Image (cartoon, rainbow, N blue to C red; front, side, top):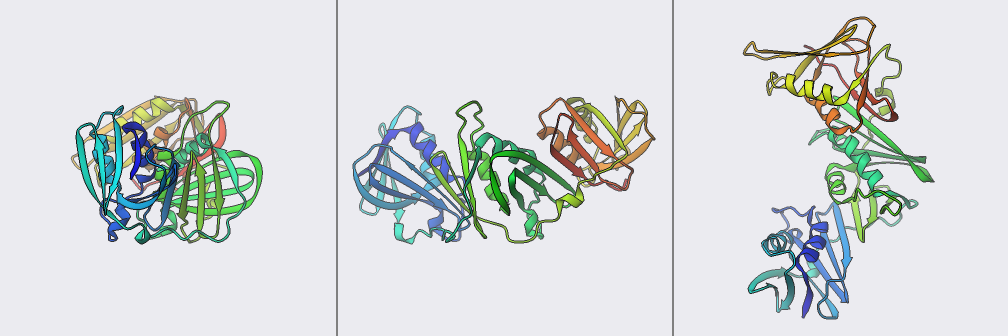
Length: 372
């Protein structure tokens, strides 16, 4: 049976949409495979890593009929990548193997039985469905995801907190040293829901979501259960386990009444940080910010007694303040903001600083000071 017959670009696009979560090495060999289910004309592809499951349905030609199997996802993609995008490729069944053909090339691939493929048990009941434009969610994820922890023993930090309440969707990420918060307005009212999405899910959503804007921009539908989230978009169904645990109270972390603030160009500040960072070491990423009337001085030094000092003109008339920060945390936030100007609120060298967009209060970034 010919399971599919279409051009390389169509086949690889469908495969890549589900294959992002497939690990190359897995304790369960079948999890390296994609589950292929043909029903009539429709071809359904499913991948899983036991925590996340992605399913998509497409029509990719081939014979009509019913058929299921599993075959190595990455291997299939690696072979397809070597073929021209306009070349017609076909996938045929032959006993317990699959034959991939393209032009004069022919590859015989081993399969594993479909009934052994471990599908994720979906939660019996999900909360109400609500939708946002894919671009809105992609932008929100981009504004906070860099602040997620990586393999922290406080497992609830290895992800992003989603808070849907009323007509607002807020996303929060923190690694204990810094915190990023971003929010957007929904078209619908939703009951309060708080869930923590795992890091791998966040990265996969960022990869898959469209950033097309305009009148007919594509949307993503979301539903949350007590231990799972379900996203539906672009013909795909994406089910993921949630991180269990209590996320820190982010409202207490965001400073409210810092007495001093400066507003300056984001690009010049980022360039200055990147220059100064060259003189920090891998072990110690600290830079010293000295804020005085009219001047912001950024300085760094290292164990070899080398030093960098950079100055920017600012509109500031308050008291002189000197405070140390991890320069990587400042570069991260400035690189992920898109606007021209940035505002920094601060108190003294013992308090965290608040970085915001002066034109839009939906984004907040808090960074802890460093002992210098």
